[in-house]
Amino acid sequence: MYNRSMKNLFGLNINELEDYFLSINEKKFKASQVFEWIYDKKIYDIELFSNIKKEIREKLKEDFNLEFIKIKKVEVGSLVRKYLFELLDGNFIEAVLMEHDYGLSVCISSEVGCNMGCRFCESGRLKRVRVLDTYEMVEQIILIENDIKKKIQSVVIMGIGEPFDNYDNVINFVKIINHPKSLAIGARHITISTCGIVPKIEEFSNLPLQINLALSLHAPSDEIRNKIMPINKVYNISKVMQAIKEYINKTNRRVTIEYVMLKGVNDSIDNARSLAKLLHGLNVYVNLIPYNETKNIEYEKSDNILNFKNELLKLGINVTVRKEFGSGISAACGQLRSKEV
Ligand code: SAH
Image 1 (cartoon, rainbow, N blue to C red):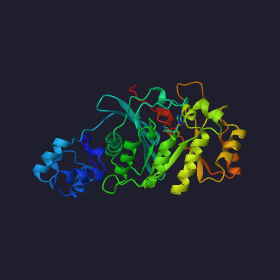
Image 2 (image 1 turned 180 degrees about the vertical axis):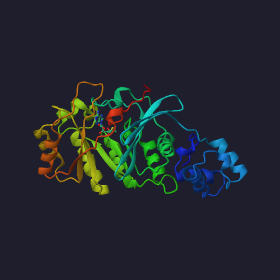
Image 3 (image 1 turned 60 degrees about the vertical axis):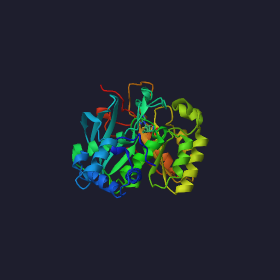
Image 4 (image 1 turned 135 degrees about the horizontal axis):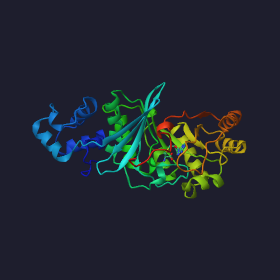
């Protein structure tokens, strides 16, 4: 249902906008017209929506704005650009544009700061200040597309924040960018990465959208996971893997298991064997992430990635190593920050 507290037009999905038009006794197809103006024609002034009559434009202006978050800084690296955005309340977030052989992808943030406290991650050093509104996620993509004058093909919600800690806004965001009349980013080209908030994985399983799910597992045992990811004390490996199994059964979709390779912590051949055992028979693939060093000197990049990968392959587990992007400009996984520096 349309909710009057939603003010920025980029925060409404098509159904909400249709409900709005119905609530003011107008035809619901006007919602598609508004979507065309803002997403297709890129017109950000309600006054210029010329196929919508003056009196409705006035009403729209009373109820909505089209304010933008601001690009504060762009850092350019090889095949990557990091965007620092200033939000309207003065908070900062970052997003990263990556150029792959298959097209452009953007990694967006879902919160200012993060409460999950993963020990190896820089983004969580600032505790969560607040979750992002839907429009603040949509605008990260629009501003990047407008900046580079090219279309984005895929979106990963893997920047600052835990997307399942901001579930409703993140799902609304996905519905918006997926819509054919907005950015039309295919559901199969959208990935949500979670540290494993079990009730939300369950809720996500029932969602009729074909988006990808990635789980930050990072350890084959509770003993190791407890040391690096505090969330494991709430939802341990057996609980989170049970939720993943149910998700796979319900959706028939393959899940990505993210595994950051930390030297001497989780990167031994024994660890690979335990991981293979844990994942045996499941429709998953493992994405090994070379650790990006941060100010936190406690962890080091593993030098055993290839052996670990080969061991998993030998044991019948699908595995890839994540391509390294953006470490030169601190734009790599776990290096984004809610701070202007
Ligand atoms: N909160 C979500 C998204 C976070 S970031 C989640 O936990 O999945 C996306 C991925 O980068 C996660 O798997 C995260 O654990 C990983 N990551 C965090 N810090 C990292 C670092 N310094 N080097 C490599 N990967 C890191």
